[in-house]
Amino acid sequence: MNGTDIDDAPYTPAIQPWEGEMVMLFTSVANLFGFRKSVGAIYGFMFCQKDPVHLDTIMLRLGMSKGTVSQGLNFLRKAGAVRLAFVPGDRREHFFPEVSLKRLVSGFLRDQIYPHLESGEDRLHNLEQLVAASADEVPDIMEDRLKRLRSWQKQAKMLLPIMQKFLESKGD
Image (cartoon, rainbow, N blue to C red; front, side):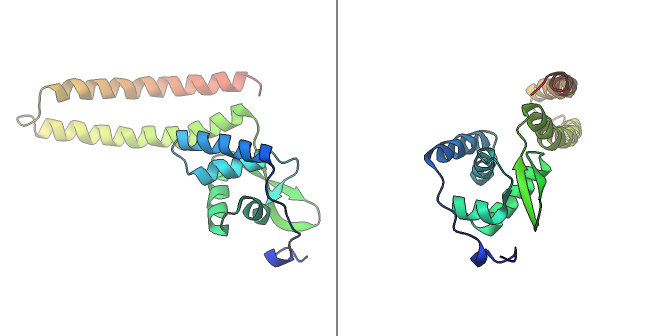
């Protein structure tokens, strides 16, 4: 096996029933957070594995396209949910799931929540300017709603660092 041709890969059986349940569990979690189901399936499959897995193995075992698995792995890597693993004698990239809840949640906060808070800050600022410029045409309730949104934004900015500190102080 030269490490590049999928045709040279050894036969890999379909997933076991317990692996399927794990895949479905993480697919549901991914769906809950608005992520692609394939991301949850990839993580769920990897969560079951003792050894690091290669993209081709995930493709074969889950019946997904190379593009789907590649995109899913890239997303999971950026989120800190999977990491690269060295496999002696194999130059291909292998992946291993992050199984620390602390690291998973920290990665989620860093990569998903904080960027949305920042873009929300910009949108809120734009809304405030639009409402101020159109004061005659804007319902009175909008001023109250904007104050409420600004308060939510401030509370979220205060709460997220506390959550991160809490996670850092706890074990897995």
